[in-house]
Amino acid sequence: MRNLFAKLWADDAGVVTIEYLVLGVFLAIALIVGVASLASAVNSELSELANTILTFNTSYAVSGQSSCVANVGGSNAVDTVGTIHIAPTTSGTANPVDDSACN
Image 1 (cartoon, rainbow, N blue to C red):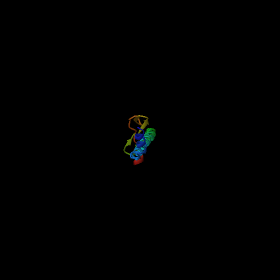
Image 2 (image 1 turned 45 degrees about the vertical axis):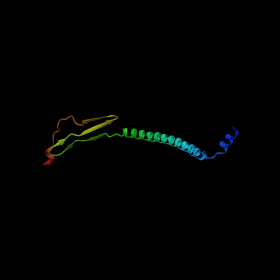
Image 3 (image 1 turned 30 degrees about the horizontal axis):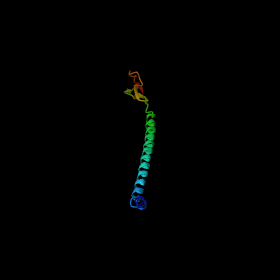
Image 4 (image 1 turned 60 degrees about the vertical axis):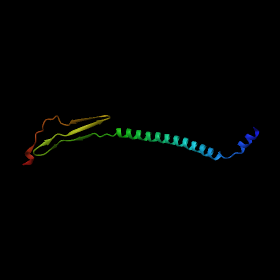
């Protein structure tokens, strides 16, 4: 029995393979932790980008136009988070056109 343990203790055949195996396990663990950390950072940045895009205000207002022969009422749109409200700026009645300046 003592001879068997002495032979096993002196045998170096599988040491390099075990060292590579341990190194591979450590690299795999480091890779998994790094990818998980990267995924968390990317998710955080994309969430911040989404919140920034949601805060954009795309409201607008256009006043009416008039000339010697016609007039057009304006319009506006008020953008709130999640909805948009579009409404004309005039009540829908035609404004009288002053054609004295056209003559």
